[in-house]
Length: 81
Image: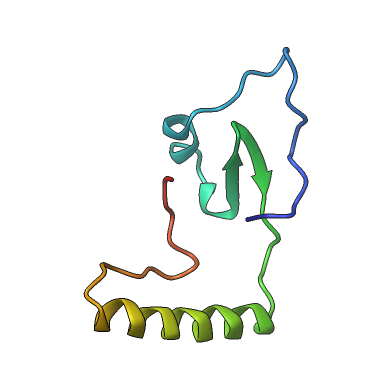
């Protein structure tokens, strides 16, 4: 989850965005939609971030595959939860 501040505070003047509207935005890969509010992600993750993601993802993938539990995706995959 992002710790970046929302680009604009939610108010009655600015309507919340839907997931369908979000995916139509050019460059949405560098943003997150949190409770209807656009949040700009940091420009570039650190090397440490990449190492942690790969290490955790590798262990998780081995466990999921060995137990036939489904799929594991990378941290840069767009998902709708």
